[in-house]
Amino acid sequence: MNKGILVVVSGFSGAGKGTVMKELMRRYDNYALSVSVTTRAPRPGEEDGREYFFRTKEEFEQLVREDALIEYAGYVDNYYGTPRSYVEQKLEEGKDVILEIEIQGAMKVKEKNPETLLVFVTPPTVEELKRRLEGRGTEKADVIASRLSRAAEEAEGMDAYDYILINDDLDECVERMHALIQSEHFRMSRNTEFINRIKEESKAFNK
Amino acid sequence: MNKGILVVVSGFSGAGKGTVMKELMRRYDNYALSVSVTTRAPRPGEEDGREYFFRTKEEFEQLVREDALIEYAGYVDNYYGTPRSYVEQKLEEGKDVILEIEIQGAMKVKEKNPETLLVFVTPPTVEELKRRLEGRGTEKADVIASRLSRAAEEAEGMDAYDYILINDDLDECVERMHALIQSEHFRMSRNTEFINRIKEESKAFNK
Image 1 (cartoon, helix red, strand yellow):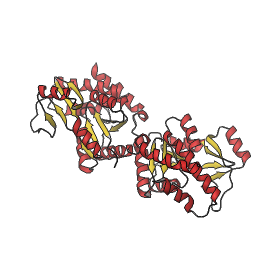
Image 2: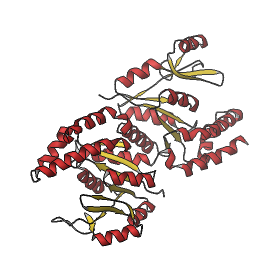
Image 3: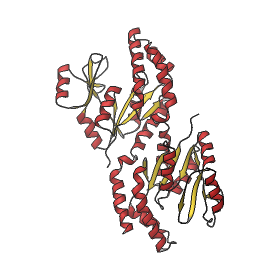
Image 4: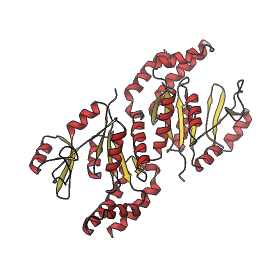
């Protein structure tokens, strides 16, 4: 059995990544979704180990010292990180492991694991992005402004990603995500073992 | 509408590329299959403009002088080439254009068009390849030997390809080919226009 692929999915806040991921997991059993560790307080309805592993700042720093996180980053006074053991175990089992993380963390993961597949999810237009960020109706003006400003920053980093998916239609976006991750298994650079065997065996023809 | 993608499909003789291509064209209308020009004589049942455009050596050389071929190569006393006009017209129409050509021609196409997608099709094992090459039962020993020796050469060039598809099950191979070509449309480097617009528009947030 082949090892799974490490996939990082990032995208603008409001692009609907979470919904795409949830639906992808529901439809296919090829995937494992990594749960992040955070020091921020749980929001109503959030459960430890489901949305996040909720830890104190001290516990988080202990994880960092133990090198138990693939990547971690600070964002608005809190830490967020990706536990190493779950990811490595699932990859060994042949699952494609999806990390839904920020661009900052994505770059760190890619640096340490160059074979990581990076996918960026975006709404069809910036106007639509703005509507989605503002449209929840529950956020204060400064929160919206900070999200928009972050979106502008994130847009600058998009080029580092391998693929861009436009989340206009949920069903279409999920199927495209599935197709592109599964296609990645056939990338030449991920099949060196098979290729070397073919090369080795076919040499016999020239003897 | 987006421009189509230029796809080169190569693979061992006997890997079943032709059947995969035929079935891909039958199932989906996203594609246009380029018909090559050759100076070799038509085999029984072959039709000018369907399997190949059959031309004399003089006519072929005229096409070369007119720069009417994307690539051409000599193989066993004959020329083979890819007509430029058909390919360019279909790409403009948004079709993904497939060239089923040898590794030598593939490298030339890639050199001139770096955005070309290269796919290599192979049987599951070299033993299976050997069985298929020998199994037709109609070929002389020296023809088989020459095919096997060519397969060994081709194996050495496999690394230059982007993807490898194992043709074990026709249906599966066709669907994988379709998924990987369609996924290629979402590659970041093929969406610079959209990305630049997003970047440009989102800058407004930081004003």
